[in-house]
Length: 127
Image (cartoon, rainbow, N blue to C red; front, side):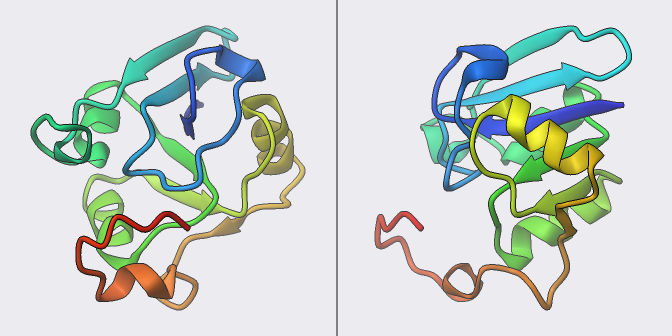
């Protein structure tokens, strides 16, 4: 399985899960079969580039994304690309993977989307 975790830095498994998946500086990609770790910079429009984070992940072959939470629009984009999303991840990348393996994370749905992102304007707030 190829997992992606939004991270605050580029330290791999020891880095911390980012609070806002779209605005993190990096995405840590882990292949659970080979234990290969790759660090992708956030080149989306949220990071001053182009496109959306799900597109970056799709190009990297990501099958599942683990994050703290995300809004409805992002959930729809991931669904369209066939990428599963689980919310509730916290701690380090290593912790998030363990939480996922132990079925402690929740599949993202419209019902559990971050409400502050549903109709947000660019207020610069972080959750």
